[in-house]
Image 1 (cartoon, rainbow, N blue to C red):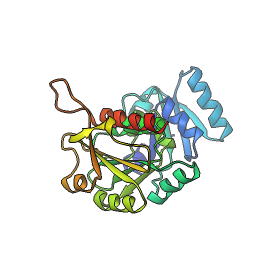
Image 2: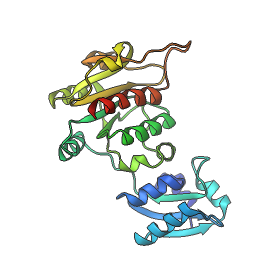
Image 3: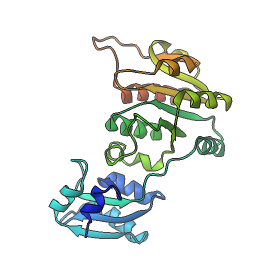
Image 4: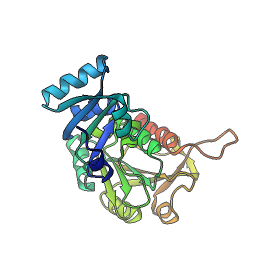
Length: 252
C-alpha cells in the first residue's frame, strides 16, 4: 500500500496525470510503482498498463480517495506514479546533445521563474521547438515538481535541465562556448529583426520583475515583442513561446 508518511517526509517523488506518466514510461525515468483509481479505463490508461507491463512496473488499483490523498495537483486524472528524482544535467550534456544532432546549440535560460505552471508550459514549448536544454538557478526558482511535470504534459521527461549557482556567471561560460545571448526586455528591438540561427541562448526574466540587472548587462542583445493593448507585458511562458518559435522559423 501507499506509504503516506514516507511521502510526507519527502522520501518519494511522483508524477501525476495520464500524459506525464505515459511519457515517463517512454523515457528512461525509473518508476517504482503506479497507482490507478479503481474503475479507471480508457485508451490512454490501456496504453499505460501495457507499457508498464513491458517495463515490469508494478501497478496497483486503489480507491479514488487514496489518489486524492496522494496527489499534489487537482488534475491527477485518477493516476499517480512514484518515480526516481528528476535527474538534472550539466551544461556540457546540453552542448553534447546539440553536437550529436549536428545543430547549433539552442538553449533557454530562465532567470528565476517561480510559477510552476509557467515553468511547465515553457518546458512543453521548448521541447516542441527543439531546444537542447534549459538552464535554471538553484535558488529562488521553481524546481521540477509534480505540478511542473503535469503542466509540461510530460515534455519534462524529454528535456535536459541544468541547475546552476549563478545565472550571470553561466552566461559568461556560454559565451565562451560560442553562444550569443539574447535577453527579453521591452527596451529591446523587435524580436524578428535579429538573426537567431546560430548558437543561441535566450534569457526569460522572472514574472513581474524581468531579468536581473547584471543578467541584462551580460546579454549580447535584447529582444522585445510589440504590445498594442493596454497591458504592459506578456506572461513569461507566452513571451518565451513567441521568441522560441521565431528562432524555429529562422532556423528552418
